[in-house]
Length: 178
Length: 178
DNA sequence: GCGGGGTGGTCTGTTCACCAGACCGCTTCT
DNA sequence: AGAAGCGGTCTGGTGAACAGACCACCCCGC
Image 1 (cartoon, rainbow over the protein chains, first blue to last red):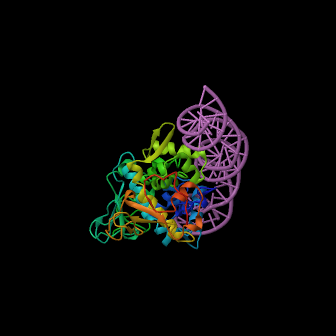
Image 2: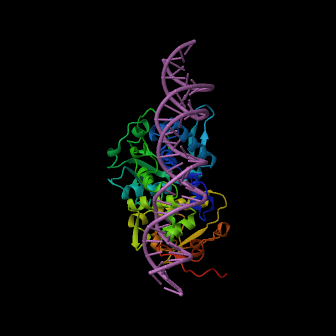
């Protein structure tokens, strides 16, 4: 999929993982799913991705058991499966790397362990309890580097206030108070 | 680079990271660098990647400060920089995910903390000292799932015995005699 | 000095994926 | 009923990846 010929012969599960999530846009789509985005249109608007490609990516993610397509009507919701949620450490690590090793390094988003109300460190550990919380126990909020790259779409606006991961983005944009 | 139009507008460092390491083959190249592969030919042979693409990937990795090209005459060696080594958590996490969420899940490679001679867990923590060792403190060895995907190139053979990460693959490695 | 092999690439044509944008059926709102 | 929004599909054009040929440079034995 992602890498065509020769990829499946690699003696490493990294290659298999990349066949599922290594294509263009895929990790960004999944990041948005962690943030609570569930709708086709929201993904498209937030990512500026072509419809055809988004359709293709969602199809392969569903086919590989990373997302489920919920919704009997014509308006499905895409939700992370257990396997999908297990990708959080990867996305977190890569995001951290981008934050620390590319230009203009002020964190755009900060993550805190909801139970302890404490930020997590670069390895994902809660500074209070020492555990590594899963995404369901984390709250995202904008960091000092956030304004540099402001977007105006609905998803971006909803993420301007603290948001519990995996809970749906509210379309009506009213604050979600935990 | 990796994602073309619209990518640089993303309000997240994940997008920036993907511009550097999100292209096809890039993470596999870097994984091999962690294993101690340093030469153009070894990478090409082990990955079955086209020469042109490998050239391009190495160029962009060097340009982005992930690798350095140490030129000893006309035969350069590609080494991970500090920024490059900081990608280990990402590669480890993604590899773990592939191991646990794709078919046939026996670990192909096991990692142990050299100082404690203890395997690390799924989060990368040493089971003895509790720390999260960097790649320079790890030793790779084949796991129970390794024989299913055996390759015959020189790099694959060198990795059939325990190997300290980041130390160069020995080109003259004695063949396996078991 | 000279030939041969290995290394580290570049240069082709072909195939394939991504893109913008038009189009379309279905659902929901007014 | 009419209109708007949603979730796609379907084009033509463009850029990237592929296999494979080709080539310059270095090193070795002689």
